[in-house]
Image 1: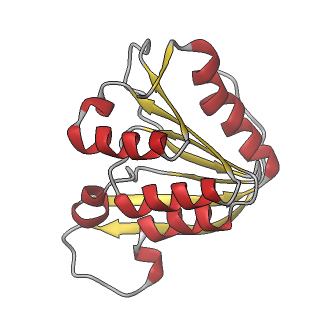
Image 2 (image 1 turned 90 degrees about the horizontal axis):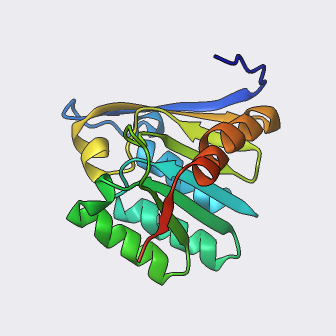
Length: 170
């Protein structure tokens, strides 16, 4: 196991409380935190995601792409067969976003990571789904730091692209 020495500053920690009574505190809204990262992205947004069915997040990805942000997605092949996720993948690819499916993995491609402009990452248990936002107890950590973003880019996003058999989503 390789130990990485990365530095970064925590921008925020976000939580979804599932069926716990709703609150208007923004730290209890993981989806809005992810959306704001796409809204703020200037050049790149690389995503390694297990499940993606939250329409507002998908719309934010498409809006970023339309602004000229290079949005690219690697998703789990098995989960992509879920009808809701297949519909979101179709929507992304129809908008010109590169979506690839990890098909060779012997384990689930269970990452939930966004890497923005090579500077900011978001990661945690939060699947980018309406179900996770509304029904699950989840967390999302947003960290700024080029070193950490570089590690996530290399050891999560690029590793999957380089070492797995990928199929472009249709």
